[in-house]
Image (cartoon, rainbow, N blue to C red; front, side, top):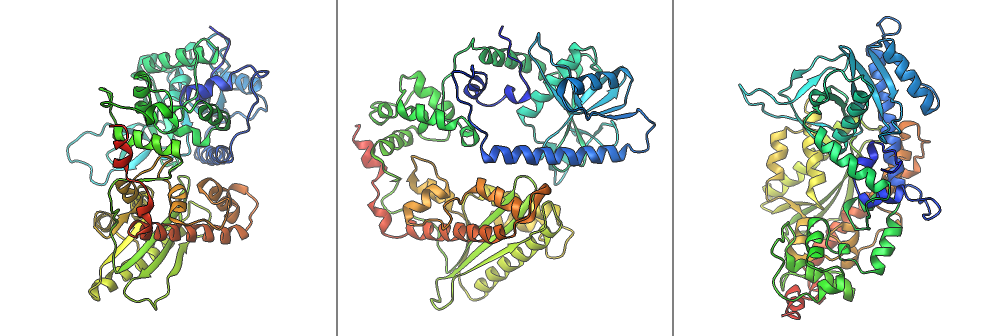
Length: 545
C-alpha cells in the first residue's frame, strides 16, 4: 500500500479528482481552487467558529480543565495538545486534532471531542442543514432520530425532526471513530459507536449511528487509498462535481479531445453506454438498434442520441413536438429568488406583465433584505413579497382574468417558500405552510424549467443561462451567475468580516432583474413562432432508422 494519507474530504466525490490531487507534482500542474470552492470553505470556517464559541459559552461555568480549546498553530502541536487533554480527562475538547496515523494513512480533526465513560465520541460542525422539520409527528410512533442539546450529551428521541443524511458527514465521523478506536480512545466498541453532528441551524446535536457504516467506510477507505497511491487507475468523466472542481479545465480539455460520451450523458447511464462499447459522442450520434437492455434512469435513451447529434452539429436545442407550449395567462408574474448558501433567501424579484392592458408598464419589483443572513428581517421581506403576489393574484381573479406566476426550476423557490413559512410563521404577514403548499400545487405556479424539459432535448443542459440566450436574451453583466452572486452578496452586506461594498447591491438587483426578464423572454419565445426554426428530435432520430 502506498504512503498516501487521507482526510475526510478524500473519502467521497470524484475518484479521478482524488487521483489528480495525489499525483506527483512534477507531472501535474496544481490548479487553484475555484472562487465558489473558496467561498464555501470560508463560510464553513466562519460557521464553525460561531458554533464553537456558542458551545464554549454554554460551558463557561465548568471547573478549570473541564473544557479545553486547542489553539496551537501547527498540526503536530494541536495533536499533542489534544492527546494531553484526553489524558487529563477533559470533558470537552474543542478544535481537536488527532495524531496522523501514518501507518494506516489517516488524518482527521473534530470540532469537538466529548468524553463518555473511559473514552470520547467525535462531534463535527457542518455548514448545511442536517435535519428537516416534521410538520405532523405521528402519534404513538417512536421517532428513529435521536438528538441532544448543545450543552451536553443527553440523547432523546426527537419527533420534531427528520435526519438529512449526507454521506460525506457519515464518512468523516466514521474516520474519526476509526482513529479514536486505534488510539484506544473510543468510548464504546467500534460497531456500537455514534458521532455527533451539528448543522447550520446549530440548535441540537444529531446522533449519528456509526456501527452500520463501519463496513462501508472500511471498503471505501481501502479503495480510496489505493487510488491515491497510484494502484488503481482512474480517468476523467463529467459528473455534477465538475462544476466546482479546480481540475475541471484540465479534465474538460481531455474529454473534449477524445469526444467522451460523458459530456452529454452522465452518471449510471454513461456507464451503461461504456459497457455497451459506446465511448464517444460520435458513436452515440450514429447509434442504431434498440437501447441497451440495462438502460435505467430518468433520461430516455432516444434523448441521449438526439443530444449527441446536436452536440456534433452544434444545434442548441431540438423540439420534442411541432408546436412547443407553455401555460400562459392574462396576468403573468415572473419570480426569481436569491439565497446565500443555507443561510436564507435575501431577495424575491418579480416582473409583472398584464397581457390585457398594453399601457400598463412591465415593472421590476424586488423584495429584499440587506441585513446579513441569517436575519429576522428575511421574514419581513418575504412577507412583503407574499402580500404583493397574493394581492395581484386576487385582483386578477376579481377582474375575471387568469393569473400565473413563473419561476425557473421551482425546487429552489419552493424550498425557500416553505422554509420561510416554517421559520417566520410567527411574524406578521408571513403565510402558513398550508397556504404556501396550496399555492405551489396550484396551476397558478408554473415552472418554466419543466416546460423546457417537456418541449426540448437540451444537449448542453437546461440551466437558464444556457437556454435563455437561444431565445435571444443576454445578461447585462458578463460575470452574472450563481457563483459570482455569492461573492457579490458577501461584499454587499459585509458578511463574516468581508469588507462591505454597497455598490454590489445594485449589481445584485440588476442580476436578479435580468433573471426574471430572461424567464419572461424564454416563455414568450416558447409559445411564439421563432422556436419553429429548431429541428424536431423525431427527424434527427429518423436518420438512424
